[in-house]
Length: 88
Image (cartoon, rainbow, N blue to C red; front, side, top):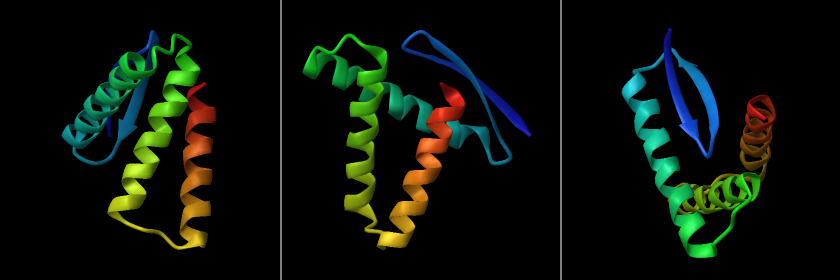
């Protein structure tokens, strides 16, 4: 088990993964890039709103790359919401 600490918008987190931590580190870097783009483009100051817009952008991007069935979308969305709830 690998632990990867990071800080995003003043929120410190430690995520654990059984996979190669490089994948998680790359995902975190990509999320940080998306968050910064949202902050600059929309001039949003509220951290939760920034994260929500970034999550929507990433969801749209993921769906355009790999369309899911309705059942898979519901399951994926629930996992995303559960993960956000855990973090907050």
